[in-house]
Image (cartoon, rainbow, N blue to C red):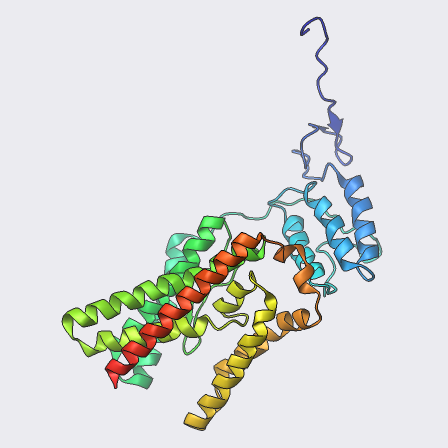
Length: 347
């Protein structure tokens, strides 16, 4: 009794599958792992699936209600986030929900917690250093200078660590940096960023730290006069400047998406100019530029359809958008200045 009034405890429900008692705030049954809000999830799922072909934005809004009824660590939660991203872009998902019964309308399955343990540090380090060593060997074969090959790969690693730090800050799971000769290094995100602002910060983290690394090389070159350090600085500035080209999947495309996805059209023009210029200079087709275009096409196509920019993913504050734009332009200006400066020193 409190103040003469009886204290009424929240009702304890029972699991529809095993009959075990389930607290009212629980999302899954502690005994069998069945969703406690399965009835509501089925109703919302059926309505969302009905709306997907005719109004993907409304369907995404309904799927968002389902997220509050699912454990964040469940595979269904992550699948719904990815599905909402596709629907927010005005497109139809290519696959049904994981575990969906083709004969049913509700894509709800039992909750089986995924293995949330991150990859061990030793294994991640082995992947990064092993692939880095392979790249050094390949670059040494083509360039004939093991020290320059090693310095170039170290600068790429510094660039990638900028992404790693940003991913860790926002709690985004990602693979360790994997080096691919003549393709740089790749980090595969396992979690979709919650919005374009986070994606932009993760994207610009690489060029920011990479620029610092190139500046350190340039400073060491001025102090020592060693030409190898000047060459590493030059290619470090070039590497990060190229990555700022405003077209996905390059870092610049991820950054400018937070300002306006339509800036990607400028990136396409820049990509075309680089392709033509490189062909005129070398007489060879640049495969890397073609691969960038191939990877960029799906997301750019959604933008050309004029729908992706209306998604919740791109609804960030104007202050954040302007801050990202200023930072992007300032970083690009710094890189362009030092790229030209170090290039003149190497002539």
